[in-house]
Amino acid sequence: MSKDRDPKPLSGLVDRFMKAYGLEGKMEEMNIINNWEEIMGKAIANRTKSVRIHEKVLYIDLHSSVMREELQSAKSLIIQKVNDYAGKDLVMNVWLG
Image 1 (cartoon, rainbow, N blue to C red):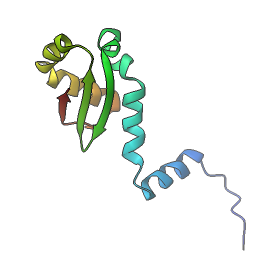
Image 2: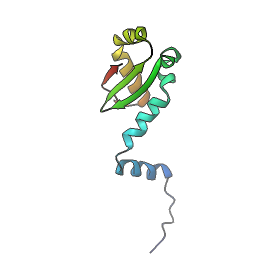
Image 3: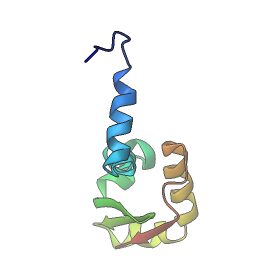
Image 4: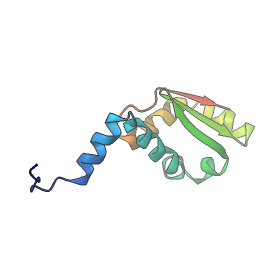
């Protein structure tokens, strides 16, 4: 058995691993969740209980019913901000709870 003398970038190996186990989208989703305040701002982040993404739907649970009503009319802006941050179409719809 010969040893491979050419170093391979670790990022390529991680990418292949994530793809093989169907986890490539999960890392992008976690990036959005972990950077929620940066994406949406402190005022919204402080009123957010939880954020999750499932099947291209962004679920946002809020503490404030007033904020929920305000964001109801801004769904397209939320989708745009999240997708811009992700660099691709990660979410297609928003559910506010």
